[in-house]
Structure formats: C-alpha cells, structure tokens
Length: 282
Image 1 (spheres, rainbow, N blue to C red):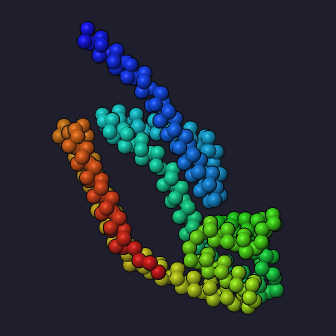
Image 2 (image 1 turned 180 degrees about the vertical axis):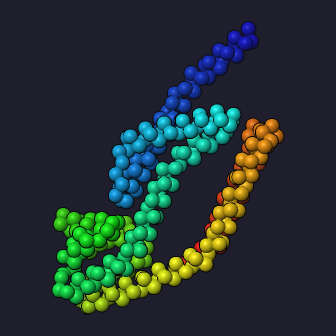
Image 3 (image 1 turned 90 degrees about the vertical axis):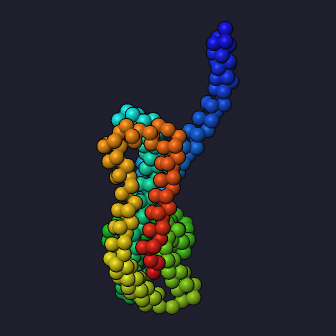
C-alpha cells in the first residue's frame, strides 16, 4: 500500500514538474542557440570566417553528446562525462577568441609596412582613398580584407572617417587608434599626412621590436607557468591509471568532488597569477 502511494506521489510530482522542466530546458536551448549564433555570425564573420549557424549548432550538440557519453563510458564516471561535455561546449568560444587574437596579431604586424606604403603612395601624388584601394589590391590578407571593407563601406555612402573608425573598432589596439586619429586630424586640419604616417610606421616598428625582446626574455617564465599549471592534471591522470580503486573515491563521493573543486579554483588562480607576473605592457 505504501509503495503504491509513494509511486503515485512520485508520478504526480513528475507530472507537475515536467512542464517547468521542459520550459527551463527550452529557455536554456534558446539562450544557447543565441550565444552560439552570436559567436558564429558576429565574431567569426568579423574575422572573415563564414559558417552556417544552424549546421554549427547541430554539430556542436552532437559533439557534446558524443564526447560526454564517450568519456563517461571510458572513465566509468558521469562526472567526468559531464565535465568533458561542458568543455566541448566552451570550445567554440575559445577557438573563436584564439582565431581573432591570432588574426589581430597578424594585422598589427602588417600595419607598419602598410603605413609606409601608404605614405609612399601619398608622396607619389595619389589621394588617400585611391592609395587605400591600391593597398587593398596588392597587400596580403588580413590587412587587404580590412582595407577592402573600408573602400566598400565608403562606396556605399559612409564617409571615409566613419569607415576608418569601423576599421579601428574591428582591429582594436593603440596602433589602429593612432592611424585613424592621424588620418582624421590631417583631413580636418591639414598637414603632411605622408610624413605623419612614415613616422608612425617607424614608431610601430620599434614598438614591435621591443615587444619581441620582451617575449624572448619572458619565454622561460611562461613555459614554467604552463608546466606548473599542467603538472597537477598530469598527476591526476597518472594516479587514476595507477590506482583506479583509490582514485575512484575522488570522482564518486562528495568529499572527492569538493577536493576537485578546490583544486580547480587553485589551478585557475595560480595560472592567472603566473600569467600576470610574466606579462609586461609596452
């Protein structure tokens, strides 16, 4: 009798909670789709990578399910499967950010040469817009893509200053700000723009040399930070393979989950501190 009443109560509670759970899952799916769509359509599109958001979402969902089930089956732990699925869900955003930073570094490396060529074109008698068009046709990407976008925005009715400000927003950094500001001031107040661009090119090239020296001097510290950050994870995997019975308590008990949480917090804090110590602003 009691078992029947308990089963009925559980069934009633499940029926009452089902609409709420479905609504919560539906809201989570909508937010997930919007965030992934923003990542694909805005961030990747600004880097000139065009991916269909619907196919991307389907592929991401299938990857999360496959990785979660595979890791859970291989490690005999639902916690590991859930963590692997969460990491897989975060990979597109991390990959998009890595790609944008990589592309931005390439843009900033190309900018001094581009400014020098732009100054030479102005000295030869070309106006600013034809000089930008010439660079867009003859420079390699990604700087050619950005300059082509500036020219197209100007043809569609935007002023050259607005198109260059949009370029500054996409690239970011002090280098692009100095370039756009120099062009705006020269067009509004007059002056020798070619000489300003030549000096700016030399300044940016010297800045890149200094940054390269700093990167070489801090390479050992950055390597040590990576080793120190990865060592606990490697030891965790090794100990799990060597002593699976003892380490199973780490993944199946509340005390073990709390220990893993503390380890994760300490790992992230240490990585951030080490990264801050080896980072030098120029």
